[in-house]
Length: 218
Image (cartoon, rainbow, N blue to C red; front, side, top):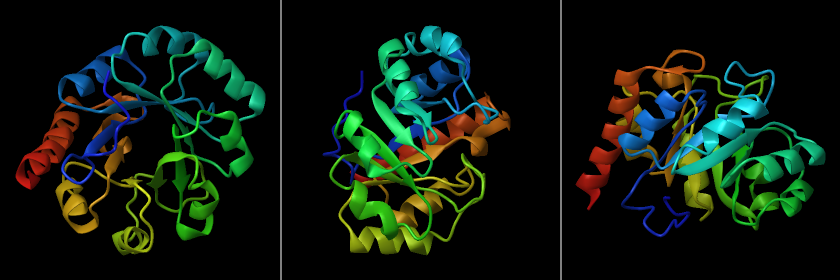
């Protein structure tokens, strides 16, 4: 399994493919170099994976597995911890820093929406990385990019590792990587045929463009 080490973040782009709902999509992502797969445990999401299905699905992947949750209760967290082989926890709602105390330290991805710096310091001691996403009135991916200048400002102001998300796709990923220089990237709707089903060509193209930048930076 790929490790959680961030030491090579400036020469290797960490790629997370989110919204995985099938073995075929997850395995395709792994075969082409994805570092992590994201599974959504938010019932209102079209990419929601029920616990019974997730139990079988996650155990089949030899890669970092990320549980994406939105304002979960402590009981929900405990059930997921007990039933599933989860490596990282992505908190995608308005969770309080207290929740971070019941999760493994250094294994939390806290999603932030502009202005990013408001909550960054509150979570800085317990996160693996921050995920910078587009503003939205709804939880989950928007499929729309935000002004990357805000991510650049965050990068200059803080030394926290961050994952760029929001509206990424094969057409804009290399531009995003050159302009922003994140530790990693997170994509879901930008490589889909429809919510929950990945487009094979787009998925492969996205990952290969990330890895191409890896080789050029060495």
